[in-house]
Image (cartoon, rainbow, N blue to C red; front, top):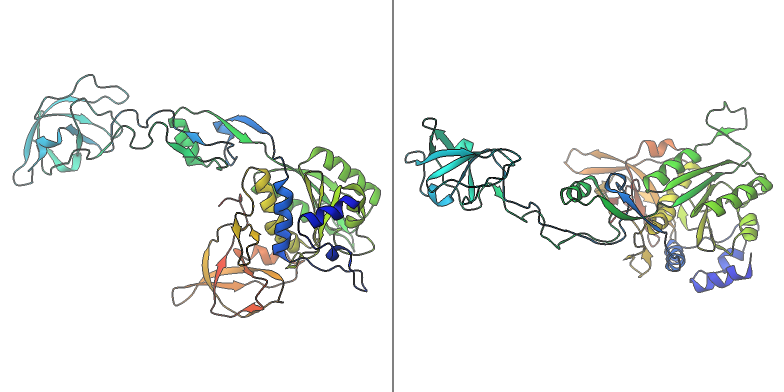
Length: 453
């Protein structure tokens, strides 16, 4: 490992001994998750951020804005009706009832898409449809359901309407100069619709992170192949590609390199040159055929920051940096890969895309980065955990007879991806706990989709 890597670990608060103290089997100590978040927070604090670019509003869905957006004009620019009915002076309807209606003369009609040049005289009204512009002199709309036409020109109003009733006034939706969206906001369909209504068609966004993905392992073959005995299809490439897409980043497939160090070095070198973040699956555990630590120690500077995280599943994670580019070596087992991505890679991608990292704090003041939970549920069985380790447990959600929502753990080995397929979320057993009891209320997290607060 380059000497600069050791200095970086100390600077970022990572206990360097965890990287170099091995047991008789060559395994290193696992770093607590809170300390890993501190390492990531420190690394990202020094990151210059990605470049920005201008895109059309049609290209901005799920992208992150670089600056606050303010309204250039009022919306709507003119009062409009929100009901089918009649544009009136509200005072002309006061006291109206079914037994004693107010009588108004129908003297005109508001044409859709046209600005009325004049309005009705007192005790007169205009027909108006939903969305029609309010004529001058009127201040309300009587709903069609609250009227009866006595003949072609006489209207009986059966219920009074107050000034402003059944209309949307100028600026009721948005006022000129109002801050609509903060910097770092992810553009949703409703946001883009509002911006279109204000004529905003060009948006400044952060460039999407480019993520290189490499699969390692002599046992891995592409999904389209029929694996012979001793081989398995590559599930991690497909899974990681989809997870990267869900975070608003661009995945780049660098293929399967087996346990061939020369091939791994060549693809890693290419990915480092072309990408903002690199992921490889397999090769992070200690073993004869695992390349991660050996290659990263030689090819990256400042080097390896963490090797082994006190989480289950996902312990054998490598986190390195090459300049400002994060490199993650993820476990080969698919469930471990998904858990490590959810906890560690997801927030880093969010930071590169323009979001803040580690704004929340855990009970000890360490930065954390978790999405808002889907909600809470009642745990349906006891779960054990080792003190000092953070556990992620997939759960299935089911309505219980007493009306509560139950969280049923979906247990299985870290190689069994079907456990995630059968679940709707994860629960987290914090490092200071040694388990959770049946009947406990637990937060359920969904790590899919963009990492937004």
